[in-house]
Amino acid sequence: MALGNTRTSWGWPARLLHWLIAGLVLFQFGLGIYMTEAVEEITRQFALYQLHKSWGFVIFALALVRVAWRATHRAPDLPSDMSRLEARLARGAHLALYVLLLLMPVTGWLTVTASTLQDDFGVRNTVFGLFDLPDPFRPGSEALETLFSTLHGSLAAALALVVLAHVGAALRHHYIRRDGVLRRMIRGH
Image 1 (cartoon, helix red, strand yellow):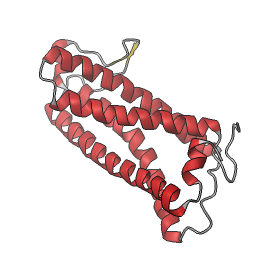
Image 2 (cartoon, rainbow, N blue to C red; image 1 turned 30 degrees about the vertical axis):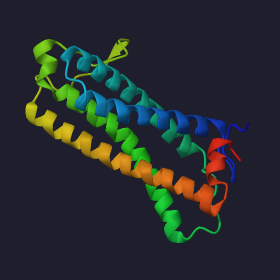
Image 3 (cartoon, rainbow, N blue to C red; image 1 turned 90 degrees about the vertical axis):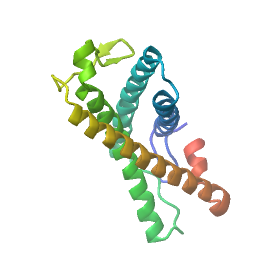
């Protein structure tokens, strides 16, 4: 198993980060919808929000590591028969994924720190109860909370669309083009 990427394959750190982040993002989508749409009991909802915030922090940290890895390790070459447009779309989608993976947790954190409930009830933003995240909005602001919440929701929708396009492209590479692009993210070659 190669540590670094090659011209034709992803190294195991890139693959591990890819699949960890992918799994956590899918979990967060489900948890976010469940906690906001299906749970009405306030203490249960509070616990789910705390869990969502904690895993959001983990995704942010993993995304930073992924971006750092990607910045220092060249990606494998795209298939030589891809058109310029397809190559641009692929690069643009990957850039969008990285940006959204960083912005989603930040806007989520800004939403909860802007909440007046933070101040009214002394709620801390903790990561799995291990440490607190800073609270830049004291006192909170309903206007800022609404702004950041709207932005967080819009970014979630954008992330969902980019993820669907990414998955669709991977499946196209695997089943239609049969060029090994998906295989090298699964097995490395």
